Amino acid sequence: MEIYVLAALVLVYIGSAIIGNRETVRKIWTFAFICAGFLTAFALFALRIKQQEVMLTADNFNWYFFLYVFGALAFALGIINLWMYRRPLWNMLRFSADDTAKE
Image (cartoon, rainbow, N blue to C red; front, side):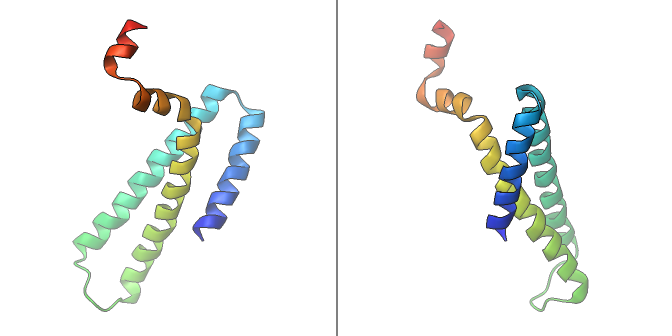
């Protein structure tokens, strides 16, 4: 499922990159990544509160599905965000803080 989600989101990203300007596209996709992360954390929190047992019940199954879907979305959105911010990330990893202060 993650491959299909990633492929669909990459196509949507390409479409939004063609239509919108660069800063708006970055804001939208970064916000989507943050939201998917928060929803995944919420699903984990809900499972932790219910004290999940070994056997899966129908009540807990919906939380696992919620966790899986938004976890897959967070994974795909994370890859897209790595692509969008590849130059700043590469510069951060390649140069030290002293090099950037000189520039």
